[in-house]
Length: 320
Image 1 (tube, rainbow, N blue to C red):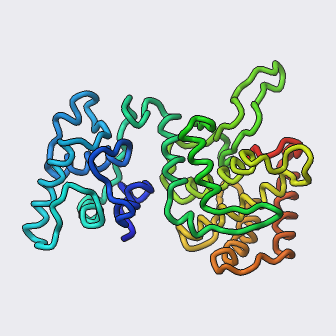
Image 2: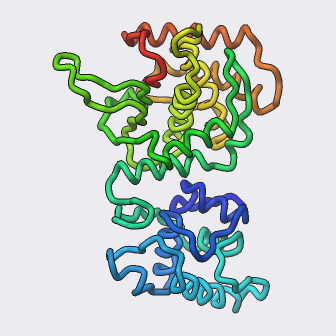
Image 3: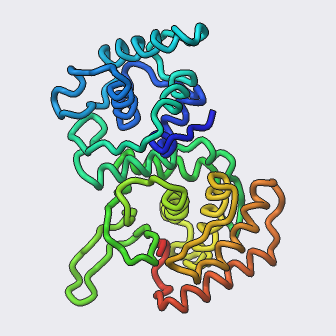
């Protein structure tokens, strides 16, 4: 069951619960639990113990959450005799939440078990959510000597969980979607370290729309190449090739989420790249071979666009 409410449909864990793969149960922690708790509160099931510390749901699926969830399920059962009363968040319960709550809800960051103490912690958790999306299993292709699959993104997700990769919010120009730094970013005059290596730098604190999510997959492709040391000393894999592969991964994920090619009103120069990458994305989803001629055309578009924007082509995998 596909969630439609903007309150829930951005969160991969909630979507997984809606598909029963797996449901959410007692003992789970994190942002998805907070949204379940807030849904219960907004539907008339107050949670004084779970909100006592922060004035906001604590993200702990404990006894109070389970009790209130069963109260909600009993209420649904009055009009739907088949509605299960089990204290578990699965397809029926998420379907009811999705139907009853159509207004977006942003919860404030808190200091809690999910690490939601600041915008960067929220961003890291949001990237983990995107990189847990079940539709990533449909991305599987090899191009320019690199194989990209769900496992590629899960490797980056694990690095985020382990703290080997970090994420930072920065206000970026409108035409910059974000980037991944494999090397320290240094001040051009003083040489001071501005942002450390192995960092996602993004102009949002939470991935809430298809553009954000597709951007995360693009930059995660760079991060995967960096983790696997593809293109580092001794190989012929270039930064422009990395960009080409990342654009195909991005286009495929965008097509899975939105059903078509991506556009960017802030950077019209990317239009031809998006269209060419989408041609290859359709091949990926059809499980057809990727034509070398089309790959070459995409690579040329990427290289020309980067030259036109004045980027230095010597630093690999920064994802700009």
